[in-house]
Length: 325
Ligand code: SF4
Ligand code: SF4
Image (cartoon, rainbow, N blue to C red):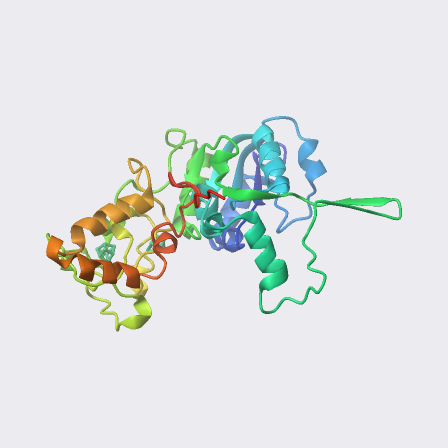
């Protein structure tokens, strides 16, 4: 099948949901495999790194890479795929923004390894062994990938052409990206392949949101009986809709959950968490005399960084926790 273009799929630091998102396009996957040859997809087919190395530069018309970059192996593979591909698509929130693995940037590498291998309640490790990158025994040596100090988005490591947003990207967005690629109808390089509008603008609950929205309290979803027909922000729930781009079909909103922000910021927003913080500053209704009550409400918000930057910490202007040890 030499006349069909070749594509590649690869995953880095992610949960595997994005790999499932590829097959979530259901029977339309038959149209995709009719139109392209898959030349690398380690999770589904038996390809090796050498198979990619042997290809000429620019061999793949596109590589779809999901997951953030945290290890030397991931860095090596995405750099190899960049060389061998005409186009790179960052597939899903972790690749686009850092995603949930990016919250690890709130901790140092040493804290993470120590907790995972020594302190967690289910760990038994009397010698306190921590993974190392090389080991020699009986004349043999073993090398393992290096675990980097922080999590990187894909575009912090290689040049990225397009972004397919979402945790995980919904089937219509994935199919739209495949179709645009195959028909040669891709937008400008650097585009995020979903509408550049806030989720609130397409939300079915938007009409219940007053023009001047003011709240006196912040609550967590398990603390209240959520009214599924009323704007969640109006109910005091942290809904990231004002700071998140649309295109997901409002899938969390429609099943009774506030948006957590997985589609990321709008094109003109520097930082998704700051955009939401700015929205919250105009919504929380406290006078200067009520400073103490405001502080109490903010203290009750258990994980501000994890809520405002759940998917976007490595891509934010903070990038992670600032340490001054
Ligand atoms: S804040 Fe959330 S629930 Fe309210 S309109 Fe926006 S997306 Fe919908
Ligand atoms: S509602 Fe928000 S968190 Fe849920 S899929 Fe859409 S963008 Fe992602």
